[in-house]
Amino acid sequence: MSYPENNEFKKIQFYLTANYNCGYISGKKAQSIVASPYQNIKQKEFDNLINIGFRRSGNHVYKPHCHECEACVPIRLNVKDFKPNKSQIRCLKKNNFEVIISDLNFNSEDFQLYQQYQSIRHQDQSTSEEDQKNEYINFLLTSNIKSQMIKFFIQDKLVMVSIVDILVDGLSAVYTFYDQNFPKLGLGTYSILWLTDWCKKNKLPYLYLGYWISDNAKMSYKTRFKPYELLNKKEWKKFNE
Image 1 (cartoon, rainbow, N blue to C red):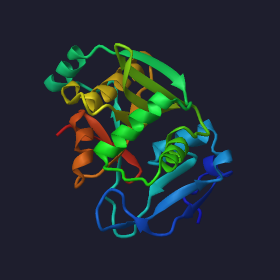
Image 2: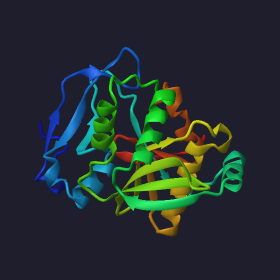
Image 3: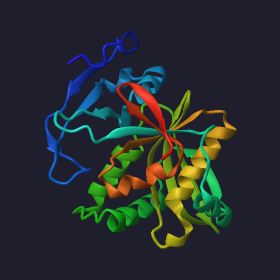
Image 4: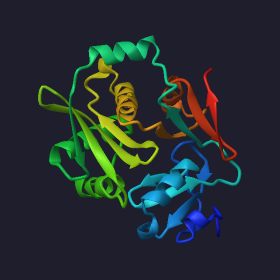
């Protein structure tokens, strides 16, 4: 398979995965296009792949490619245009975290928070802690490009971790997990607001938020940040409804 056909990707091959159970829509089968080998995906190639709708999970750079479904739509924020609503402004004002930015590394405190988040948010029933640890390392701490962890603390207590990829034109939000014991803080919302502000301070125009699916309630929060842009037929289009 040779998608996408572009001189920018001449050192990269693309293959289509076998069918697997969709993690976003119950009862659906999914397929993805995967860029390979990951060693050949340098920063320039990665930036270009993100811009046409790919994502990273560990060393896998992929894009959904389902024959009978186009529900996964790449979404990003143009931080220059973004205007927080009243609820988001309140979220910013009521939170005051200590923030530490670091390279990807394993830390038991981070891992414990990840375990807690998975068990409550996603009802993860992994059979062993070793399986969870391997998943955590492979999924979040393995990267072939420039990636960082942003840790948020309240009085020395870790409450949230965001993993991001650093791009020439912005940030790609890979994954965020947080303490479920602070529902009134709006931690998920705050992480996006913080990343948007970081983009502005560093003159990075875009914050990439992965995929949005209209029929998936867990992804509805992404379109609360307006205006947002969706990738439609190789073109980013602005929406403000």
